[in-house]
Image 1: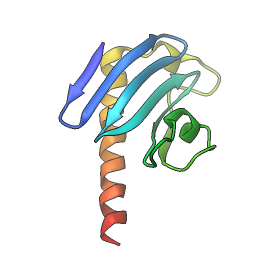
Image 2: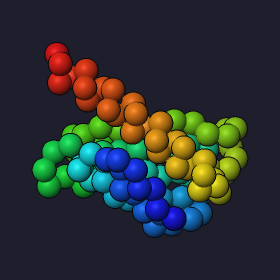
Image 3: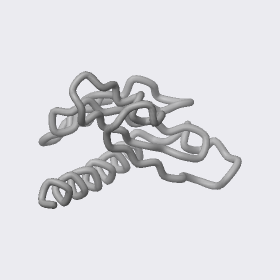
Image 4: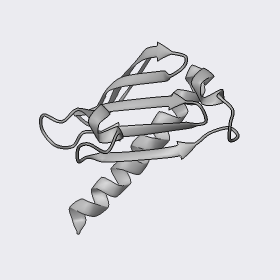
Length: 105
């Protein structure tokens, strides 16, 4: 399962528990993960930075985490590919908007 659109090159590297996609967004390394009742997208905007480190708060970059399902369930870990890819697109849109606004400041 690949998500390939202008500026987005993400490949599904794990289909369940967690659902994971890895690749690039606008040329930056990116990592998306869904597990338990949440999901998140991390983008490493600094050279040599791993997006997993960004997702864990160990490195600078852009990240967004959101709830999914109900507290205590594990539905995010079994998310359908179409839903995962929709949520990746939404995260990329949020990244681009914030990145553009910061560049204009």
